[in-house]
Length: 272
Image (cartoon, rainbow, N blue to C red; front, side):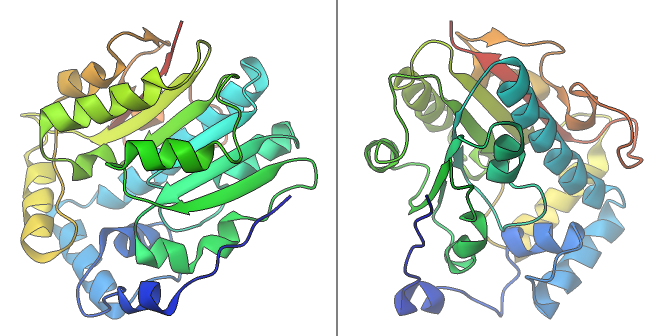
């Protein structure tokens, strides 16, 4: 069953095409078409500062596919709450999950009017399953949980997906608290899938690229150390291989060539 949200005129008015936007630049790096010249120019400038930046987008996307497939195939997860969805592209969460288990239910949430305007592409569910889209900010935990309950059964395990979204929370205490509140609302057997841009002394070009973005683009980004990213999994059973470069999380054969390591780290944790 699929529910198509009405895309309001007001939501479209919120889209600014004269300023580079992270979702559209990410889309540009992934080879998508939902971006503007201003995004392409900023994306190219960032790539000059850090030539491997486009690989982060690809590594993060491939990590999403592997994590969702693992949770659906190996852990029997049939419900997914994907917050900070981003622009639709190939192998979205519902496509990967429903390929394994057509009855899977997926709720996407994002407060970006650009994503809202393309939300229909996220809602091509199988007949057996269901997808829904919420126009909500990550900070609105109660509203997300209340609305997601229309589609998801919170008495059964849920996979919470937070890919590259807590980077928009610059306050550490707030960021950790939001993730804890979301996981506290989910039953045992639920999982957290999270990725985050890191900062590390041996990756100074990443810091330069983020600094450029924060000066010219929107929304602003916050980097954290690998240890700080691992902190989001406190209280959970962190699955092997832990919090690592996204392309090192259970890689499979046949994927695109990527650098030995990217500055987008991710992990998967289980609530026991």
